[in-house]
Length: 303
Image (cartoon, rainbow, N blue to C red):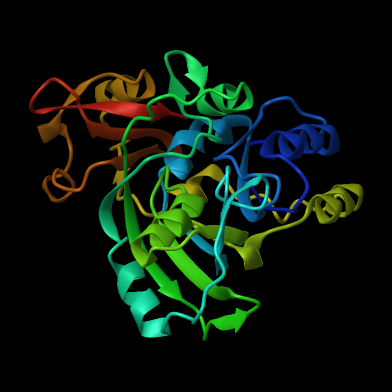
């Protein structure tokens, strides 16, 4: 079975748990997820199956959409509710929503994040969360990310010296949403924590496309595989190059994943890389600019 399962990950499970359960349900080994979601986060988790696992890196690079909740008035070791409270402050008065929104806007575009100690980034061959569990602080590398949008959703509410508000963020690969919450608190001058998070979209999938694990099990039991997204469907954003079938030499080169001259492509595709290469309407490769040879293209993925 080759393709993608748009899975809705429920809270209380790791992404690895989901892969393990999908393997059991589908009775197959070649299964991989497209980016870790913390156990306390639910949402869209595309699962790649069979030859679809070649798309893992491509899908991880895509834009994500999250909704959640931020609470001003306390901070934790993990920047979410999983950690211990390390700072607390009762707010005398709430911040105005337009003031919060203005500072949220400052956290968009190309920004630098310092990843939380409880994260999987490696420093000197060891993951940050391993240092944190040992009670060790290490210098964390700056982490460039791109945030398309970070905004309030509805009015905030103020209760018991804390201010709570819903948010939406649209961001690129590697963005720590809980760090956005902490950094927003720093801009406001108060401790802040991300108190809820849901991934509503992972391009090209949204929550409406997804099945839960129990729904997947029911579908398989009923021999219903209409949920399976073909590999080709995940690559529709890329221009299509139909390799001319009459050029047997070129067909063989593409089938073997050969490096080609950029001029091999039709003129209208040369400035639109990467492109998907099809032979007899079958997807064969994803061709892109050669990393160190000018005027050449090479496959970044073979199918």
